[in-house]
Image 1 (tube, rainbow, N blue to C red):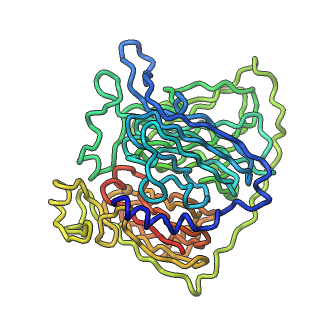
Image 2: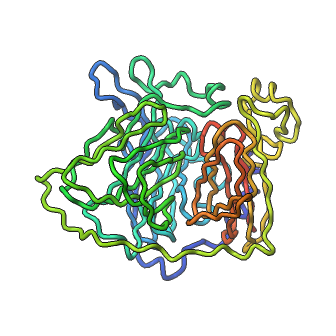
Length: 460
Ligand SMILES: [Cu+2]
C-alpha cells in the first residue's frame, strides 16, 4: 500500500465520530508515556547465558501495567526509540478506529524518533493488553507488550489483584533470543514461532508472595506469538471472565489459552503454595506459583459467594449479513493457488517468492483486503470454516462477538475478542457493527497473519 492508498483508506476513519468519547466520559484523564526502546536483559537466571537485546516499553518486561477506570479518558504517548517504525494496538478495547494502532491501516507507522498520542476512553471493564502492531510477528516476539486493566464500578473484593503475562521465547544455544530464525518459512507454514523458554511477567517460574488464606484475582494473558498455553492449576479455581468479559462462574482447573486470549480467575488460597504448570508440550513445565507468606499480613477479603453476570441475549439475526470466510493453506493443507494483489499464483510460488502460505476465500490477505463493507448498525455473522490442519486464534478488532456453533446452535456464554478454532472447526462470530472504520480480522498466531491470514471489515 502506498501513501496515497493509505490516506484514502483512512479518510473514512478520520471522519468518524469518536466512539466512546461522550461528554460524560471526559471528566477525568490519565496520561501515560510508553517509550519503546531496546534494552539488554537476560531471559534466563543462568549466569553462563548472555543477555538478549529485547524491545520493551519503558525498559520493563512486560511493559508497565496500565490501570484505568471504565469510561475514563486515557492518553498514552508512544515515543519510538526503536530502530524501526512501530505502533501500539489496544487489544480488545472498543475505541475509535484512528486509535486502534494498526500500522498502515488505521494510522501511518510511528517512525524512529517520532511520537504518537493515543486517546480513548475504554468502555468495558476487564483484562486487556497492548502490543506493537507493526511487523508484529517480530516486534512482539522481542517483548513489545504490556497489560491494560480497566476497572469497573463493582469489582469483586480480593486481597491481591495480579496480572500474569505468559510468553514463550525461542532461545538459541547461548540462551539468547534466537534472532536468526525470525521469518523462517517453516514456522509460518506450520504452527508459528513456538518458543523453548517460558516466562511469566518476564521471569522464569516466579514465586509471587501472597497473604496466607487470601482471595486472589489472577488475570492471565497469553502474550506468545503462537503457542496455545495449557495451564494446570494446583486446585480448581473460579473462572470469572474471558477476554475481559464476565462469564458465568465456573469451576476450572485446566485452562486452554490461545494467543491474545485472557482469563480471569478467582482463587481462594489456603496456607499452601499454589503452583501453575504449563503442559502444552506434553512435559510439565513450572510456570509460576502463588506462595503464602505470613510476613505480608493477614488476608481480609471475605470469601463471599460471587454472583453470575446478567446474561446477554444475541442481537436479532433476521436481517444479519452473512460473511463466509473459508480458511485454507499451511503445511499439509489443500490450497493450490491463491490471489495476491489481484494475481492468481500457485502456492509454491507464493511460499517461495512472497512468503505467503495462507488465504481467506482464496485471497492472500493484506491491508487492502475487504471481507465486507457493512453499514453502521448492521449485524454480521462471520461464518468461519477452518479448512486447514492447524489451530487459529481469530481476533476481530473493534468489536466483541458471540461465538455460535453452526451445527448445534450453541452460543458462547459471553462475548469475546479472540476465538480459538481447531483444525476443521466451523464457527460463527456474531457482532453488531456499531463502530465505523476499518477493522482488522486476523489470526493472532502472528506468523500466520504475516503469511496471509488477515482481512478487513469496513463499517461506514
Ligand atoms: Cu493461524
